[in-house]
Length: 219
Image (cartoon, rainbow, N blue to C red):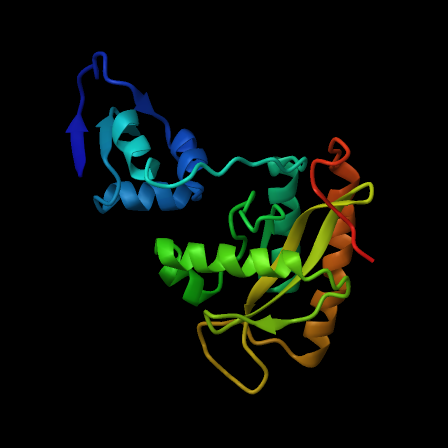
């Protein structure tokens, strides 16, 4: 669906890559990759990709809008996820309590890199993350999901309210040795589980939400 254009686009409304990121909830590299291979309607204006607004919005009109009501700053959350993923050697993502990501997936494992553009994979992840939000066990632990790798999470709070999660994933289940997932020793697993609450606590200090807006902490 890509088109070349060097002249003025006239009255057609065009979106930037950043706007497409926000609309489709994908990262910038994925936007460019999908423009290059024709999976997104795209126009080359000079050296920049631009995207016809009507066609981009047409891709999501059949879906209910996802409104990010998280009080976390996405920029701060993304930076925290990037640092944690690099230090721990796993995938890290920050989500709201509905399981919707508010950051890109940092340090995706090879399996996720191969499948990250598949909308069914994202929907499966969101559904699993939502289930993890509904489990109010406060001690992080690894659990295997439908996609065949393990994830663990810690809650982000605003006061006494739960407003989001920090998730670590892409981990080989015990006893398996898939090369497209991250292999963690028992010591590395413990290090991840110990680190998640600290990352969540850092984000909790930056979050502020009106009382009653989000889920209250269950004890």
